[in-house]
Length: 150
Image 1 (cartoon, helix red, strand yellow):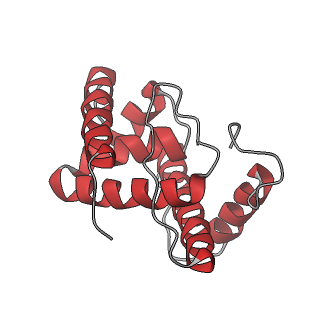
Image 2: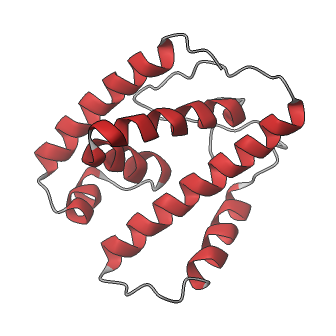
């Protein structure tokens, strides 16, 4: 959220608040450990951001999706609405090909987890996380750079 423009509709505190409300509303979850909680929080934040982006996109009617740049800094661009929708769609496609790589992006990008925390959450080595991170970013960059029909 640090790269957002001033006055955007979803502030970081609102995102955390919404994620918290959804987390405490989950009655049937048997929290296994801290990593399980962080993983669920990352997934919820992704859903909240994408829902907000889809809602804003529907309100603009006919607004075409813009290409997203996916760089090392992972700062959400000025107009994250359409970019988050495109990223979410691409992550869904990646999940069909390789679930773990999709989860690495979700945990690091949406959850803000470190390489070490991501490795622990997925029960893999840090080298595996770094390799998945690098390959998933390259795949997503290619996917998001190619023109797609809506």
